[in-house]
Image (tube, rainbow, N blue to C red; front, top):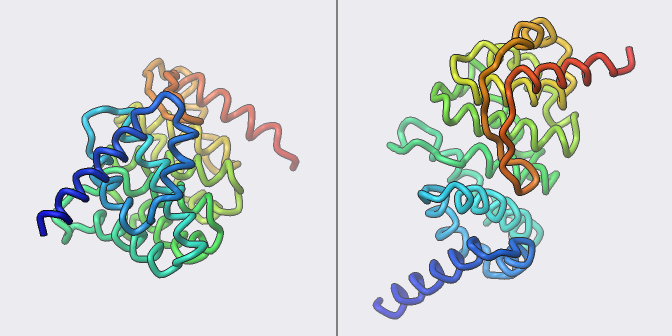
Length: 233
């Protein structure tokens, strides 16, 4: 028992070292080569890390590990996806930090996972479904919409009817991420809501392409409107 515990601690230290490394692309390559079912547990724990960069790198690493796992052990990948879903369930007793982001990252990377879980992901934005009330989770969900839409707009088609509501949020990050998602997803139904945000001076931060970006809601809304207007009729 002690040997297993020590091994678990050693693995957790190794994973943390990789998440902290200067060259995260090398770390990611090493993480996906580790036994998927074993490395998932420490990565889950780092979704709660105090360091924002560590948390986001854990999101990206989990998505990549789940993708790799799905290629060789689809059942293991599905177990992990269901664990993420459970963490967002009220009955879990937790908050589900990072779960929407990891689900989106995994689905963007692996189409078979998207086929299996995209409808569940969409339900988190649906008032008649499994709507996520907590604004911090809504930020993660909208980040996920952006990630999926950048991969393939078709992946977020069923999310489009639900996006305008987030433009009215009292949380600047939710409004800003929603505006960003609307533009990338091509959600023309949200254009009136975007226009109301073009004078919104509030700022928010987003983690995109491995970097933190500070943006204003108004600039994001204007860019989204430009994207919508450039779409073919």
